[in-house]
Image (cartoon, rainbow, N blue to C red; front, side, top):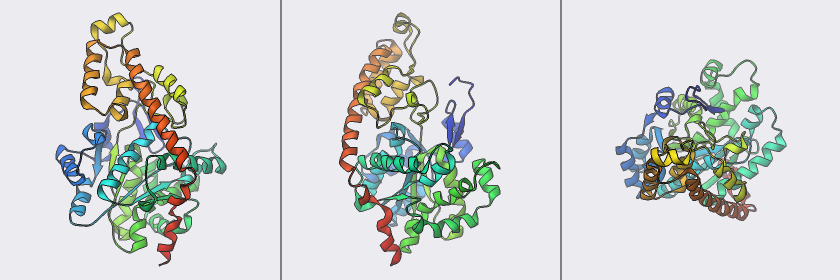
Length: 381
């Protein structure tokens, strides 16, 4: 989008040119400092590329939750997905980081598929559509390599029996004026949508409620979801729980100029269900920071700072820092043209999709193994 396009970031809409310093200020989060990174690396036993490259850039109480862990107070992880369509590569970013945290800290993941939310907020989406996408999105999560021993997938509609008691406690503590202020609800919003934030809060407290032990929680997510956790944090202590910590990632850029990947614009995003051939076509049509002519670019260089191809390298597809620095040097110096750069990226994305889609096939008959329905026995105890 043009530079003067207004930046809008809400749980349901992201558009405009992203200013992450401004988002930290607007949302009231804290920047992840080098010192905090080092503490996390030391406790995890290794670095993570998404932290090293500032793709996870802000947090709430990350320092506190690490201190609690040092004291022997283990935490749980909570994240999720609203199943309104197929998953694209941008959705995978917090899930990949979540898996790393889960493995390094030996903790449990509660993953919420908010089928009720998407039904309330998406007028053209039927319940059958939501159910289909819920299953498809679960495959994408499990294809990353999570194991059922410590991964619990919550489907709001199916598992309402184990969520409702907590949800009503949250709902009683949140006024309509607060919900309007945080989420921008108007009088035309259906009452399901107004109720929904209470459901979004539940997994942050569910473990503590089931097992009777006050347990810290951290939520890896894109920063557009932060308003939900502001409400959750506001009611947490009044309900007898810890405020959930969170760690926020930047948006994977869309293939067009400006903005992020959007499930509503198929050509702006690479979906996990795209064929490798479709993905290649999208990469070759992607917006870059190149010049109008090859001659001009060889003379003046290009601008990787606004190039979606370079940003894809940065997020997932060029993990070697030296290789990334060399591509940037060649780009700025005019030694490589945009077409050549796309030819490097395309096969990497195609290989990624082939492996991911093979993993999706392997878990198609295993989704039930991860169901949060297993928690019902613990609740009865």
